[in-house]
Amino acid sequence: MSRSTRPRTVRRAFAAFAIAAASVTTAACGDDVVDDGVEQEVDEGVTDVEEGVDDAEQEIEEGVDDAEQEVDEETDG
Image (tube, rainbow, N blue to C red):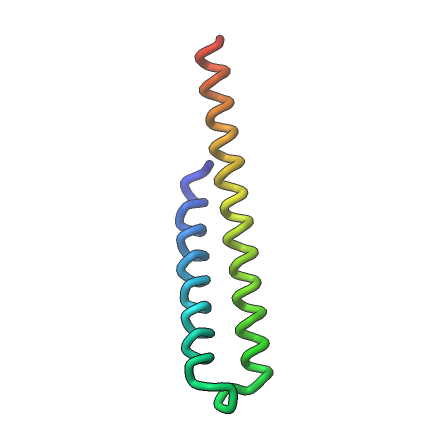
């Protein structure tokens, strides 16, 4: 896993949190205040960020697996 993956993952997680918080705030204000187009854009943004976080998690897991394999190879060899 490269060091550059961590900051990107953190940024994505913060972005997901911010978008989720915005959608909760929007929902608290009521349906009449929110334009359907804006609500759909927020939902799509949340989905995009969630997918990005999922991708980042997968990259991290793959990086950990690769590192574990390298350690195993070095200890066996």
